[in-house]
Length: 136
Image (cartoon, rainbow, N blue to C red; front, side, top):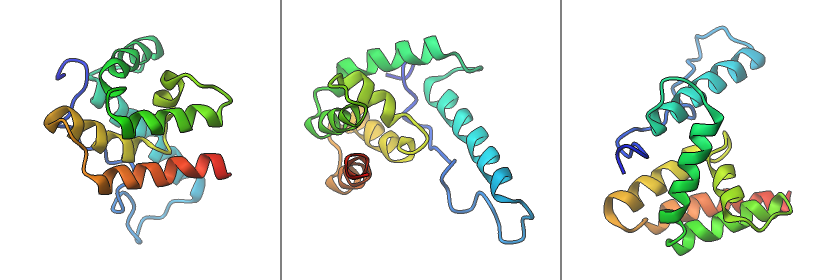
């Protein structure tokens, strides 16, 4: 899966040390900076130099073929899709790659590709956040 998905990459846009207490940035600047880091994280995961929706979407479609075999991930995809009044797991997987969920979905996907399983604690974290979509 190395060409399709970089399992060695660790996303950093949600790291607690992105901003220091001594940083003088307002909320709008923080949002902008985190969005930039998120986009770079996404590019690194997919091994891309520049953002290309078509390429990323094609890679996500290919990923779905492998990820749909994990019942926990598949359930999260369906829940996320349902929140968009859709029943397509591809829609749900795309949501899992969004800003709100990538930091939780990526470790699950990496572990699944590397070991064939996902530790329950990681799945629980992702599912808890995805469940909030429906209750919102």
